[in-house]
Image (cartoon, rainbow, N blue to C red):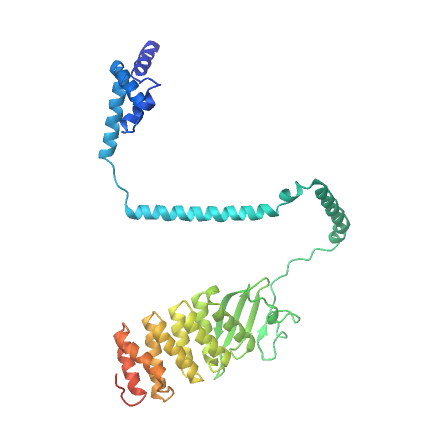
Length: 357
């Protein structure tokens, strides 16, 4: 058995080209140019070496086979690969900048070049820790604060109950970091406004209870709409629906108009338009409706805007000024929605005598 293996190994070795000529064989097979002296030497060698001649033929056959089956990559794949490479290079560059910035702040970069100053600084730090450490350790560690419990005695002057200690009113709650865990609405008897319960998740959970007429409830609802990127659409819809009852409040009206312009959810923008219906003063509401009619990409929001404008025009609450007429004529001609084009033409008629358009 051992002899057979040795015989095969020796046969495989004899088929290999000469090691000193193999690099030139690969270059010649790939149509690479070599110097005249190397070409002459290689030609003489190939005339006397069968192994190198066979190796050169094999290299040419392999390259021809690869060329015959060459497949061009898809353009989409190339674009994707280039984009991925650019992103990877950008991340590497940002990471390198961050590592350099952080590295410049490490003590090893500024202590080592100045051993004398480094020793003095370390002695000062050790002295400071030795003096202040025992004093700091003598202070007791306070237990973590537990969730606040609602108390009937804790209420604001308007009646909104707050589950905060007496010395920590709602104004102390950091709304910039708090989150709204839920909005619960409970109907009241008779014509009284419904009771609202707002659950806030902060460092210490807080629950605000009252009606929408209470300033603390209003403050949280307005904060939700002003910071629409932080809260879910369902929470924002509930806030708009509750603030509808206070649409004539200047602050509430302003926030509802901002929601029509800026909220990224079409349902919230539509609900805000509905809440503004009938609010005062009319000029601000009219301008908000015109902006939504021109700029909003959702046809449902634009339909609600043109319907509200027609209602205001029918009640004589929209002036027949040039600005309004220009927008209505533009929508009558260019809006992709047939209903909006028809209603824009009808709104122009509602504003006064038939215009020459």
